[in-house]
Image (tube, rainbow, N blue to C red; front, side, top):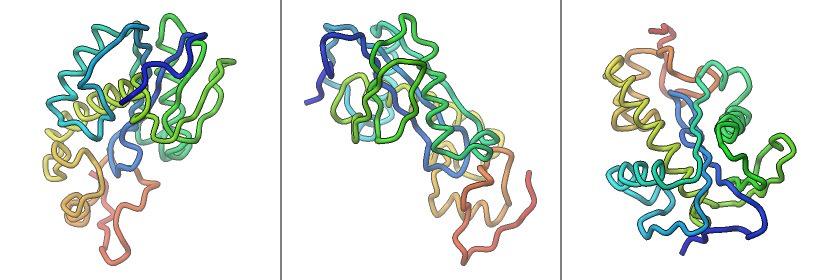
Length: 202
């Protein structure tokens, strides 16, 4: 069972990202402050939920959270500063949107850079331990999935509505066949060595 709070003294937010391991599309982060009396038995790590449940929870979380922020960092920035720094930047930008600002930041994972002078706590698998991080994982995932469905209409041959930009066999075959797009992360290894890459960019 997920815990509501890490501690009781400070106002805390949870933050998480989605899309870090993808070959295409932005990395998206969210930050959420939940009320002290928040309760929802459906809320869990976004990876363990169906897309329908995530979309139901997205509405609930946006209505019931004290504050939330969502931010995307696009492919050019990912290629420029690397995916770890881009993920942290997206988290910082989502925290910046929160009003009130938190006094403690709960971060999913083990890497983070201090945001302003607010103390933070990194928690490995935090999205399966704390409700605020799970809430952030849902909002990051639903926002990113919506973006990938939108750009799928522009480039339907890559199957982004289904694979969301992750390195599936079908996605890699499409890269091999059609080349790369403006949405692909050029700093990532888009194809294994045994697959030849067409270098044209759509």
